[in-house]
Image 1 (cartoon, helix red, strand yellow):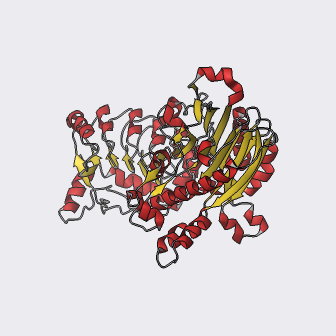
Image 2 (cartoon, rainbow, N blue to C red):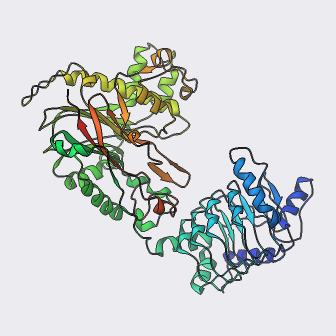
Image 3 (cartoon, rainbow, N blue to C red):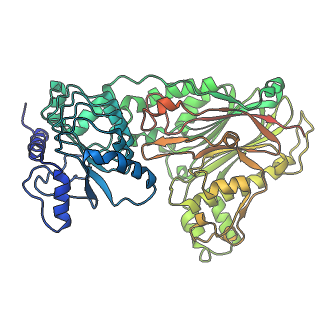
Length: 579
């Protein structure tokens, strides 16, 4: 083996590991540190990460505790303490590192994996022949040391340890690595010396280090089996007898191509636009929806891919307002929102866009001075999020339909910004809808007195969970001006009088209980996308279910080979109510 810095690190890792075989080596070292001493010379302790995703700084004889206590636990203690851990799962833990090293253990009691708060686990220098797949439950682990055992393989579930930064398998009998390890996108240190691994793995480690080995596993492994099709959930079977009154809506954040560089757990080939475009095409054509509300659509994608693909649809697109500062070529890469409507089902009567920064300034002018309410200027008018609205007429029934689509500000710490944006959206849609109600139709004589009477669907990526002020405002119709999500900021009449809207909006998926997630990444998996509808004049007759749970238990996040975005698509079938 050619001597390189990467392989020298492997040798050093192996040397320090072999000197750490005494029982509870790490816990003893941590205790020494806590008493103000220095852990020295007894061999491997912890490794100080470089923090840049490259080779770690090996301290060798010094111990870095990362501010957590290490617990010594003998195997006989595991079951009882694990049961207790379940009871205090929501309480503060005084320790998060567990050292069971050097005890001659032959197997691991699965109750250990109830310690889901663990950050570090040392089970090195035992006589283990199997690492249980249940280790996947320890998803907060950053350090796992199984060196000096009798393992012949690693479980595929090890790839689900999404927080893992250091994995040591030194001095085992492991002959191959599971392809699922390619999902370990945070792994910085991988100690492999002393295993009969293929020469190709060792050579790659020697030449390029840990990240190269993980990327090789990620990019060159076969794609996993496809998930089962998402179920269609029928809510009203009688709706099939009234097909002329039924229409379908899809909402989908398709993931703008320029944002794909952050998904280190996804194979690089599955992130290429060519691959994602083909998968997206199959998905959209399979849905054959009457209305598509899409987010993170850039100008080039709208013009060159979506418009030709959805040739039987009319389309409307508006980019984020930053596009105004860019040249023609660069502006095509700016994402925004798009709505497509099937021209055999709906007739377009009007279309409008909403730029939240401009709407915020209008709110500012209503409050006279910038100095009086600087938060409107500094926090809202600086965001370039947009919404678009189309005013449609259902060809067969003459019913009108207002369709909105938006993508709110992303920052989870700026809940006030999102809440105000929704307030602006509702205000603008009310004003637009009232004008729309007065528009004459050439084919139909349906009459509406106000926006509230017109059926409405509002889709989008709201970057807000079900317990947020955004969800409360949309579904309840008002929030107080001192709502917690306002975070003490001042927004003129929105703060003084609260935020209200007159619509009877309801989440389509609330009819079955909100989905467990619509956005799935290793660090965040929640419902933040919604299809809202006006419950006074529309009913939901069917919904697209969530992805297969068995499949989801084997992935750490999207996008991947089967899901082209970090969001899933939502689809609802709706029926106009009799008036």
